[in-house]
Image 1 (spheres, rainbow, N blue to C red):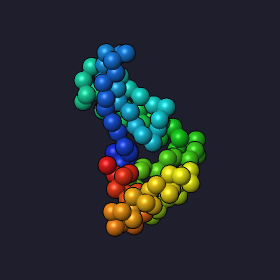
Image 2: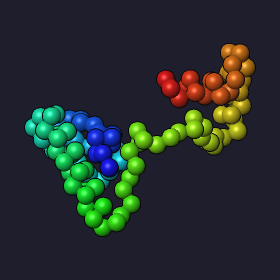
Image 3: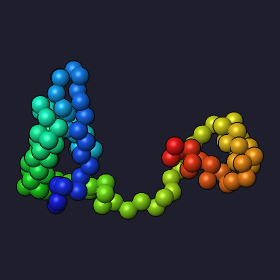
Image 4: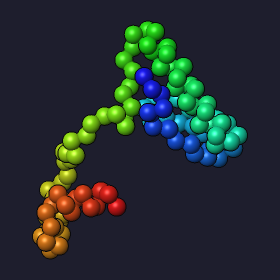
Length: 107
C-alpha cells in the first residue's frame, strides 16, 4: 500500500493556533504542527503507522480515492417541485436535465 496515494489536506486551525494535517480516507486522524510542511509530514507518518497496524491485524485498509474507479453516474432524490423547476430550466436553456445538473454541481 502506497500511503502517498491517499488524499491529504493541510488547513489552519484557529482553535489550536496551528496547521492541521488531515487525510480524507482516515477521517478520525489528524496532526497538528507549527508549519504546513510538518503538518503534512505528521499526518502522512500517522497514516503510514495506522496502515501498518491494520495490515498486521488483517484489517480492511481503505482504498485511496485516487485509485477508485468512478462511473460518472449517481442517483439523487429531489422533491418533485425541484425536479420540475430544473426540467423547465433545462428546456429553457436548450440543454438536457443531466447537462444542467452537471453544470450546477460543478459550479
